[in-house]
Length: 63
Image (cartoon, rainbow, N blue to C red):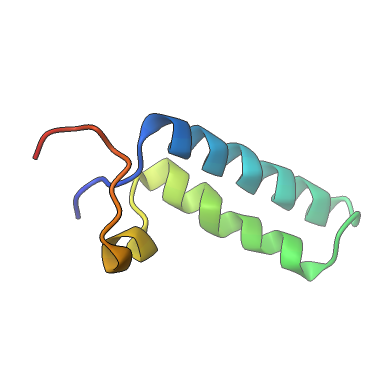
């Protein structure tokens, strides 16, 4: 499993995931806010399966 999520992309995913989860936990949004776990996980693991399928790589690391 190669990393394919760059630094800026990673930070944005983690922030967006935490915001959605927080909004869901406080009842501000519906159940769909728990889907914030997906961008949070992809940001933490630096790997996005959708990027692999689409051939996208925002990580500047050399292979």
